[in-house]
Every structure is written in structure tokens, then in C-alpha cells.
Length: 170
Image 1 (tube, helix red, strand yellow):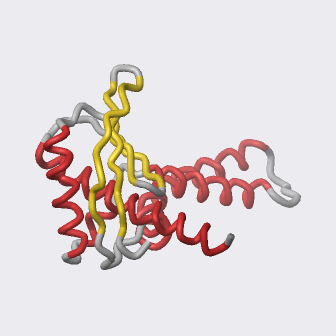
Image 2 (cartoon, rainbow, N blue to C red; image 1 turned 90 degrees about the vertical axis):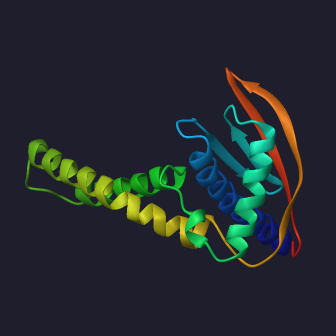
């Protein structure tokens, strides 16, 4: 069971890195295009009006560039991991600020919580980048290839496609 779970987590991390790399490349090719990605063990979903041929070409380029060592493509500034990082920092900081007996009133605690919220926002992005690099993505030298790109219809007015990915050492 543990080996299966570890394998699934590794697949999600690889696909998460590929998703980010693909979105970086697509953002350069289609400036102003709004896209969202979500990774799973079998590939990733792309939400946005991206032509399939451009998506296919971009995923292939992302695979090649990651394999060539461009690991910074795996980190994305708009990743949800950054929001989680800020939330973790704010939650831990807030818990510390509100714990224990305080001689100070609610206004002093409010000021401390405001400072903690500001610090969490300031430190959240670098912490989020660190989490992406070390926890939520992985860019190893294993060869991956696109099995298929499948149209998944629309979510609201947004087209959704799923990029099926196979990793050679998975």
C-alpha cells in the first residue's frame, strides 16, 4: 500500500511540474490567455481556450526543457501552493499570537494579528516557491510522453482539456 501511495504522489508531483512548465510556455505563446491547471496521477487538466495543437506542442516543449534541466519552469507564481503557504504562516502565527494568557486587550492582539497577516503575505510567496520546489513538484530525468489530449467539455464558459501523461519509470 505504501509503495502504491508513494508512486501516486510521485506521479502527481511530476505532472504538477509539467503542468507549470506547460503553462509558462503557453503564457509566452498566448499572451493574455487566462489558464488554470490541476494535476493528478495520470496527467493534468488545463482550463482555458487553448487550441489543442498549441497545447500539444507546448507540452512536448515543456517535457524537453524539463529533461534538459530547466527546473525553474516547474515553479509558478500563481500556483495554489503559494496560497496554502500564506495560510499556513497566518494560521500558525495567529495561533501563537492568541495562545496563552495575555495582559493586553483585544486591540493589542488585533495589532499583532495584523502584523502577522502582513508578514504571512510577505513571506508566503518565497515559502510557497520553496514548497513547490521541494514538496509539490519534482523534475527528475525520467522520460515522460503525452499519451493523449482529451477534450473534457466546459466548466461554465471555460473549455477543459486533459493531458494524459505516461512516465517511463513509474
